[in-house]
Length: 296
Image (cartoon, rainbow, N blue to C red; front, top):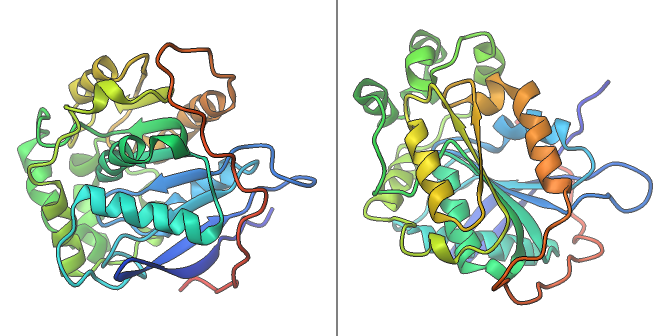
């Protein structure tokens, strides 16, 4: 069965032009699921989320390359998480989306938290994978963090394979497929991503996140230890914590276990909650059309 192909488009978000992709939901008429906005990990390009998009075929999946990552030009000046959240909102506006579900992995999980707080009226449900509350976190394995500080794993497949288990706490069975999807970031783009997280923490606003939230954490995560997921679930009202048997890349290595959890969470009916957010903007009936462009 052929893969569901994304449609790519360059979208201006403030002073940045970001490479954006949408996997359109399948089915007769309008897709049954709410659109899902995805925030990727540090240095990670759009193509890495293709397996997730293939699994969630009933909804539009929206993703973008951060400045200097994948096919997006590097930002002229450093940016902060609230700036990136504003870029993501501009992308949704340009593509014609209103209310969405939001998901973020690792560094992208921090950005997803910022977006859910900053644009709460646009967020229906929130999924946080292998992530933390930012600077107030329990750090991971120092050897893994030292290797994470440089984007060499994106540039050198042999280096990635050699250190895959240490970096991600997973076996190497899924490493070749993962490696084949990599696109090296620019040094400046990667540095700006690291810089964006310095001094940032979501702790002050996590108690004010009202969206139903699913926190997924790996029990062998060498980069973001499990205790950070427990911490997030404690601070976000009503959050659900699911512990996955795997490391930092459990979304890839444990896809058969994780994808059903994600799908069930996104599809379940919301229960009435006290102090709920104001009524949200309805989702657009049809996103803005965009031109198909083959991925490199």
